[in-house]
Image: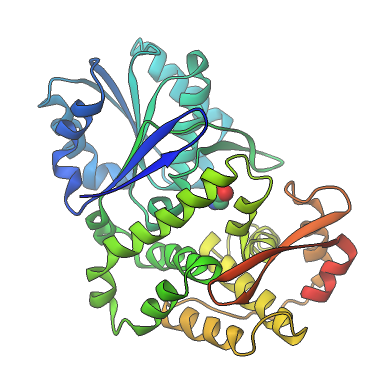
Length: 353
Ligand code: GLY
């Protein structure tokens, strides 16, 4: 089993990565949690594959288990669903000494984490991420949130899990489109911090070889994220490097009403667009955008779309909650594996689109 420890000022927690880990999850949790009650929050898709298995494994280890099954998809990251989750947890008479498990992708992780952070002023929780995106990104680093009608992740907190359990085998049941959606973020880690990871991804001959290396890939991405989060837990500096491709990506997602492109697909477009520009401006090593194009194509990701409505996109960028005052911090790369923050006045963002 691979283990990474995230060390923060007020908390330290492990990330465990192992194929088949889920089969033995009850015993694993028994090692770190001594009370009786466990509430699993999951969605219908994940429940079909793993819900009963996880519940049975916990019950076989003596836990009293509640399973709450939500509708899949971003719509569930709402205040309404949050209220339902609070209600079910309170009916179960959960206390601050008990445990909540987020079993699912990013939506389940974010919503469950936020419920855990706020109910009774904080109930401990564990992440069992089931999508690639959640395994390498959203389950680590403590960002938890729900959406509001006015936008995504507008109510949230930093609340870290007690542990993260990652079973790469669970990716075998992930829908193809969402597998490659996660690959965009894997590629991002290569671009911002790890040329070797990037080159390895370029060299794998087929999906079989990729999957054979999945525990190394997940371990590498989680290690990069751990290092960044340890330096900048609250996202005021280096953590923004994780947003490579995201400024344009978020704007594209929003422009198309979150219907045309998944998060990863939009980030892929953003990474290529920004690197093509910075290369033209001679602040990125020549050839970098071609390499990004090549790797995106290899992993079933589009690298370019025609944007007619640039003004609207720019407005979206200006309204992004992460851009402070009149300036925006863009993430650029000098070379594959070497990233930095480039602060510039908002009106100059046009130069990069
Ligand atoms: N997903 C970006 C972050 O955790 O900061």
